[in-house]
Image 1 (cartoon, rainbow, N blue to C red):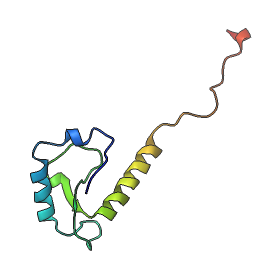
Image 2 (cartoon, rainbow, N blue to C red):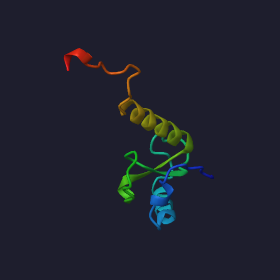
Image 3 (cartoon, helix red, strand yellow):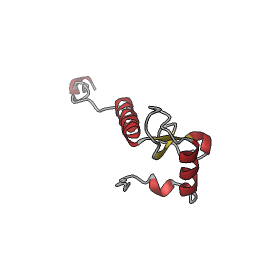
Length: 96
């Protein structure tokens, strides 16, 4: 499956990523999230980490991976401080 990653995430993968991926998919042949479909993706258990140890990776299917990624992205956006639409109150110029 081809990925169109717009982030620097792919460049941060270790040189032995293909071997790690194969080990994870061999260890987890069935998706660890739905326990129904075949694992096709080596996913980081904790979102947005560069922890590439086998213990920090899990085999998941594509639909579960998309759902997990969407949830993680929504949580990150909700946690980010959003600027208000209103300007902060200003001191009256005569009170300076």
